[in-house]
Image (cartoon, rainbow, N blue to C red; front, side):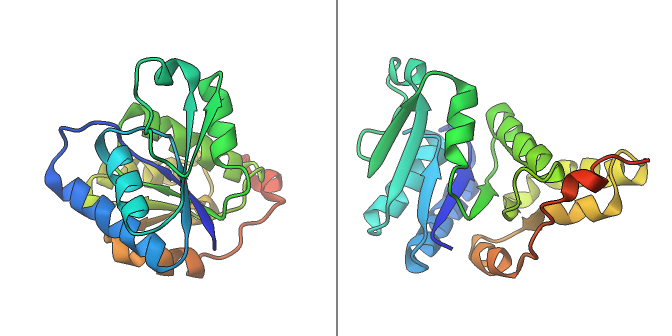
Length: 193
């Protein structure tokens, strides 16, 4: 495990409990020798994650569309900053060569990134661990919705193993290391029949 992709919020107005969890996770990454690739922002949990990892001596790569940089959203002190033309290119670049995805609390952008990677995993196009950090029970409604998808036969029970919910940042790395390998032939059971 050497490179993880992190999805998280750009809002600077969220409760301090989310910043605290982000800082703890960032320090865990550096302690375990794990580099980070993320959306390249300088504000909110995005900026907090990058600043924490960099301050602790870690490596951080940001990936951001040029139009976002044009309004000065990008972090200017990253190890590496990659520009893309579109949001689609950004998402694709962020998961190239990674060992796992971690989703911290966020809103529509984070949800969209998370759901895309879950969909790719369901289709067998992505086979890495997906960890959802459930700080302050933020993702309880999502957990309920995903369970409902299975209960109502929109997904198979085995699809619930595509991700793991973790309540504390200190448990993320252990969960990553203990996540079973996903089946690359997942497309064969992607549809519920």
